[in-house]
Length: 191
Image (cartoon, rainbow, N blue to C red; front, side, top):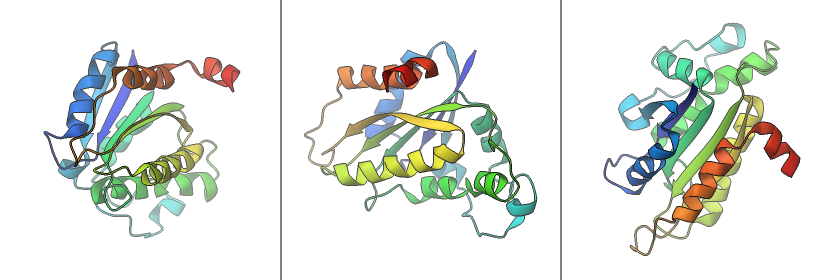
């Protein structure tokens, strides 16, 4: 059975990101789904202590279980609002903690630093039409997963949520699911 990790980056349990989690789950009933709320997780920031340059893992153990699930996942989906043109702080802290894998790759020679390949999607909601910010956020994840043995292959962007002029687009959601779940060899043949 495939494993999906849903990483929730919004502080609101009743907002647009929360609604999108509920809309996406029925498409993955054949997967084991684990969910992490980054606000509840309250990750410590990376302190660049250098521990992971010489050791597997992190000197701070608050994300140990999260990273076990992260490494085992076949699919990873980030659900995030745009905060000041980027990820909210708790989600940014999780991304910064990927340093353990960068050091595994570039300091200790682990190729790849995570054995299991991942297909990654990002669902971004924005109060305004912050398309440039959404592009930047997506590109940040693409750069990260290029090292982490994954590919960001799907994005679903919902702008203008503060104005109430947004809609949930089932066609875009289904396109997102298809891009995320497409077999790797199929995706490569379309490039």
